[in-house]
Length: 265
Length: 248
Image 1 (cartoon, rainbow over the protein chains, first blue to last red):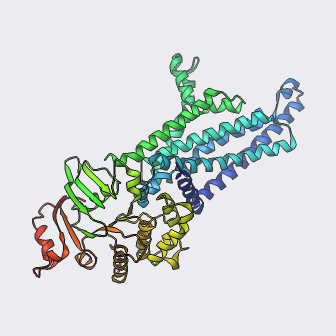
Image 2 (spheres, rainbow over the protein chains, first blue to last red):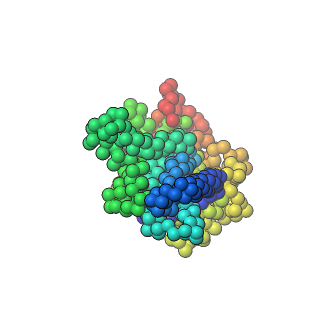
Image 3 (cartoon, one colour):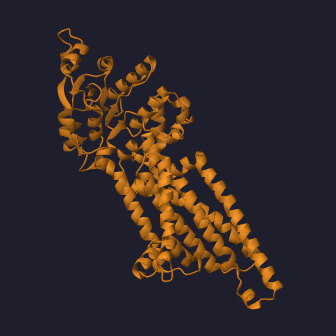
């Protein structure tokens, strides 16, 4: 595994000499700023209205975590859904298009080193994005008193969501030599995964499809959104963390199989 | 140094390489000839471990390519048909990356890269971005990545394709020095594929001819041209019945 750093380092460097990293970072920062501002403004407007009408019990329940940070993190998890594929699309597809896969596959390193090294690079980039997100609640700490553990749990959730998206994007990139196809495939997979909770809602009791609780529960369990929301509420449970770990492991295994498959043909 | 034993590669019904065997001794420079689509690239890809053979065995420097792949791959420097370059990297950074991939000890990376740069005449462009280099220079960078870890075996797939005559002469000169090193340098064993006959006459001492996936000729260059025949006539004779050219 000593080549992990070599692979990951080259990948990161390449991201930062191409425009991709900067486009993604800029877009992400602008969107984060916009959504943060809008949730703060909504919050203060809400307070103003509640104060005006003296609705005191609701006013007492208001807090920064549930009404500013949670919606902000929620929106940012959707932004990741659009941007992470941009980071991962080149991981394997670009190697194949350049012919450099032939260099990697004839060098003394294992396929796991290639796959994990590339995932590590994507993970580092996702960590930078989540670090950017963390700056905004940081501002709130200067003016208010959000709960630190709850905020950290949400950030951890966002990180795990981002890492899962990274693994899925890596897989999408491993099955094609076109970066465009890798992007679209990753995006479609992520969208499906994200939509599972809506499907679950349709099937839930009282929902349009009603009934079948086993199916509903399964869909709900498979959806990233539901596990993420639990963490944003401050509940870090083993089962949620295990869900993300399993998701990441599954797609990295698939990516490894796809990379290895050149040897089967 | 290099041994192929009954190497075969089949893709469904298509037989790309059919039962090819040979042994190449240390320090030999072997020209691997054949018409386009004869199976040269496929054979080289099996020797370098990029693809596994359907049948047979490839042994490099005493290591079986598929039973002991990491050690075997460490002994090989490989220049594929299109040089495996990252256009966004600079020459020096790229070679350092390859050196680390090939397990050059960390403290020797700088020295090995400097040597490869110098041997391939790349010292002047070491900081240039690869994507901005001319084709000739990119080919040299490809050759530099093949020798950066000083491997005993070099496998070069059409190393001079697409170069101008001056560049071709330079690359050939370089390959010749790799096989006949000065004191203290590794003596490389070289297989190079080509369909340019004068290239073989210029640098190889032994010729292997592959046609429709089969080895049809394997002989020292001197013997082939002994009777006053040109290599071209020999080539034509052995590939004459080419009515159904195989796909590449």
